[in-house]
Length: 184
Image (cartoon, rainbow, N blue to C red):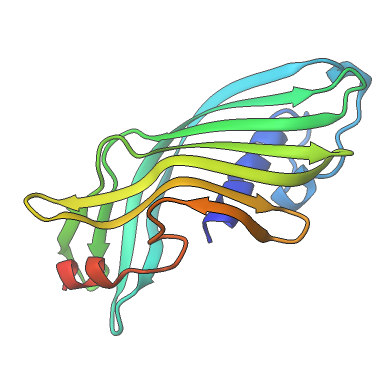
């Protein structure tokens, strides 16, 4: 789920470099152009997410709301071929995780939730995704972490196989048990 979100975000970033609107599916098509030769394109944006599904707790779901600030760079080689996208995402205000049937049951993520993504391209097509940081972290005072995704994740985008994964992986593994216990 996270990989798809990241690719959609980066797809939007690539579309921002195009004069015409581009779907996320089309965003990763080879980007050969003399006008992009040797260029680095930079931009930033903010986007909200409301009611994003985190996981199921039986009869109810955990949802999250957040506002992300993004800084992105798109790098082209001398021939104008897309070679790398670097994106930095930071949650502007602490995210909120809540019970969809009783939103008064909620908890906030830590204020430093952030992620840095690198997508590497071969012949203009995405080849490798490297994600790192603390994109998700929920802690309870005097208890500790009840839900988190930290560390580094590397995915081969040709096979969708995880090449490397280190850190706390509740999001990647869809482990919402402690979050469900807290929000019930």
